[in-house]
Image (cartoon, rainbow, N blue to C red; front, side, top):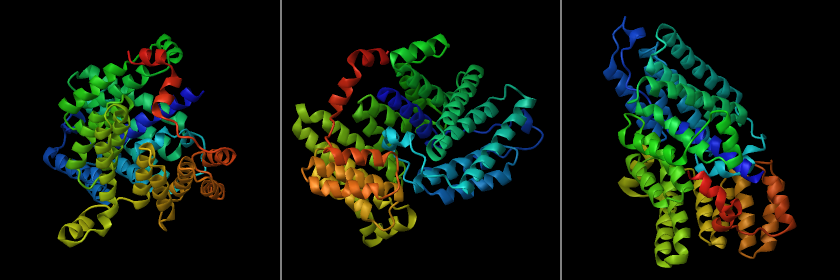
Length: 452
């Protein structure tokens, strides 16, 4: 059951994080449905580029303005409403601190539904995706082999899957929409084998199916569903090097998969490259730091000095994010004026996680408590921060302080199964599970089969 929960979590994370990489679009062509009117490709591409530059740099309002202009200039093209839906979704995730890959590894995220989505946001998102889908279908009625319309139709389904899973937490809807997205993009590649951008969804699907536990994989194979982790990774790596607009999408998803494959150096390379390209995106910086901490955990036994260097580099990234608001001089003022500030509650929380993994339980507890103490901290993150602080205090041998934090968690609304974990912590002290122990419990045989 535990492995099945993890599998479900990972499958949904694939669609959630895949859709979170927003640059995958086509270079719009004057296809048959648009032939009657001139299509200003130069303006379309400029709006697309500016919009996604803003979106990758977490400037949601700037992206929204570009995409609204696109919708007005190209009312018969599905890109405008789809991109508006993507920017709305990503803004919603960012405000609720859900743009971190590690969140979707928490099994509690897939249980509780106490945090309801804003009805206005849900209604706006559904209307935008409805518009985009209708425009795609209108083009496909005129030309069933319109690869651009098929691509956008699949992209709309993928976005709906991501929204259902991460915002509404309707996981069956997420899986259905995600499967539809893969089907549409397979049709695209069948019509045009060189359409590498459409392979992002397919590569992720192949990786997920290839990683299924053996009994489920055999059942899936009977139904004609097959996949390969090796093939999926190779597909995404091809898109990262040969894709037209989806290169950064593929690189973003590979960060997650490389970590899962324990290729932490590769994950760090991708994250740091994207952090350099999109300097205002603090998420990539934190993903790079997380990869460094994981690499240090691997290095600790065979090369303690290398591990210390990796940890120090990771901690420096978090410190730089925490001190950004205190920056002085022209550089600091310029950064504050042009780029979004990393939410300090999220930075403190992520820093605490990194310290905890690195074995610095006492320091980790302080960062978790700092996250919880911020007056503008997101409510759900505050609850999780107090829970993690309690666990860190337990590991640090401060049982009485840990008990106080477990009780504080129970006094708050239940978030991602936090009450169950807090009650468990009150009964017995939390013990830090090492990655090696967790992996051995899954069985070496299954790992060998899943890597095929």
